[in-house]
Image (tube, rainbow, N blue to C red; front, side, top):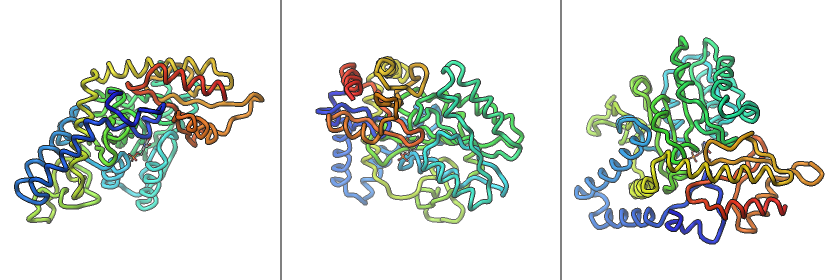
Length: 390
Ligand SMILES: Cc1ncc(COP(=O)(O)O)c(C=O)c1O
């Protein structure tokens, strides 16, 4: 897989959680797809079967990974669209409360706040960051559920929680949270941000429990930017109205009145870039060639443990998690010889000058290095040596 990725040559790359590298076969599949479209004619009856085939192929692959039927899978542009499009179509009542974890991405949080402003909803925060940093992974599920219990009120109508937290790298007990929400008198909707989980861990047994399980192809799946998806629950498909509407939302283009698709396509909009589907489907096949999601996670965890263990020995480094991470996100802080926190932006820049790419985060102010199946031990050791030299 590594040899397929020109992006990994000549640098030491740890930003898979930001964007994964695009393998050459996926790039070639996209080019071939564009060429086929032009050869057949971009708007001809001869091209439609090809476009349908490419879209169906990627929808089926993504639905299979999510453990849902293809009718529950809407193709979107990215994680954010996968969250926002169905979320805004839910039947809200003024006074409903949204419970949002404090480890969610700012774009999703902002969308929820704007929804709350327009619909007269309340917003409450579910504090998890401190728990993740203080609790062993084996006990985290129970602790998160206790915290959820405290956050739920009779008005709670939605819970927003990532599967794999993008800041600490901790794994959330999504299935147990879903089960608890089913027992709540109002059965709150569960929106799961799967930006960091899809492509890095097995999600098949978890995604079907969420009402909205939104992901992108351009991070851990190593697909092109601009194509993602969202797996939707049956009850959401029954109750949510389409939001951004275009011809792809319609069951029958000839008669636009109330003829939206009954399935997840009601949240798809209009013309989009089909070659991206060819590229993502190829990346998913390449990943599958490397092993099952569970086998690949083992490889990832071997690497993230090596980094996590190494960080324990770097003077001034402190990992956010108290034990090796459950997947590929390794977050940490660095302090200088006097014990003062180092400026994380400076660290990113300094490492970047040496061809080593990690990122910083705002909340908490920390550094994050991601390990994928393509990461080598030598790269991890190089990062550790560079951090030690700092
Ligand atoms: C947890 C999380 N949610 C959402 C996003 C936004 O992703 P997208 O640009 O695909 O909408 C990111 C991107 O880094 C993320 O890490």
